[in-house]
Length: 423
Image (cartoon, rainbow, N blue to C red; front, side):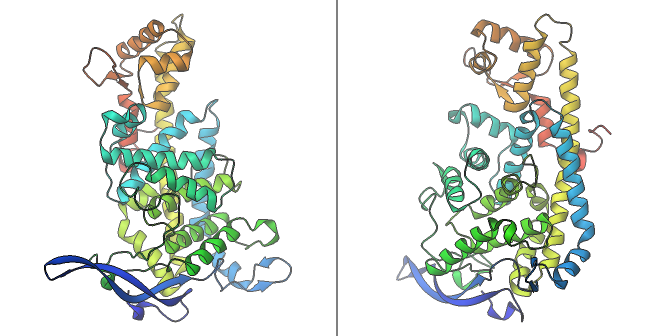
């Protein structure tokens, strides 16, 4: 890591550390220790907020900072409100939320070069034996998010460790101490994978890492006694930066850091539903994402980072809003196809199940609708005839049925969503 890239006033401390890189010596590959420096971030919130004895960290700098970022913060906040309104009108919000969540974890995994389609992911949820290794990793990402959302725990170290354990279960990286903070120095690759060429080196393991994690947990759960005077989206941007900079685990930090963006607003009471996402935007603007995070560390560029973060939240919320409206329109059209049938109630329940699960089989339908296997198969047949699902195995038994139109909407790039959506 280049020490000269850190400009005066950068928000952290540079400390000595030892990294490792592979070298060829006497014809054999060896893991060789290399001396270097690591970055230890200062505590949140940033020090440029002047201490006030009455209201905590809410001085002139905070007011000026918020004023300069008013437009991107307002746009992101207002778009999230509209999206939450669309989700909230449903008797069962999971009809939309689970599909949108799949899209989020899929794009989050793409940033780490793990590629799987929405159908691959849904198939993995039904039967892990019928899928491939990268789809399993994306599925674990989904499980990690849902573990965090369903946990009774607040946003804390234990919750992060539980989510990390789910993320790394049975996939690449499972040998890197799932659910435990790293015990070795890691680095973010630069021009090569060598430690000497690292683009960024997070805090060393041990005392530095432990102190950073504890400080982050205190910032998250500080309560009303120490307000920052900042909009919660700004605090969320800072939280995401801090987690990625600390890099507490040996693997999976990027996905967990983006999971925090989705989970934290719900856990902290800012949003009713987990709809704050960033992965789709940053998958398309990966270099800007990495550079934005890095320049906070090297140049104290908080304003630029918060602006970029709020842009990502706003753009993705707008995309999810268009996607949600189209899915609701599709759902209404499916309901209409069974409005006159005697079994319309069961058919509508099955439609909602398809929106939630994407891929179904007779056994799962029978269990969900509390009907016999023949009745379940009869209703699946009606869905096939109506063009709502298609059989995807080609088998005579253990057949699976996918909601193809729903999957197509979820797979669509945001640039194609506007003509699909309703006003």
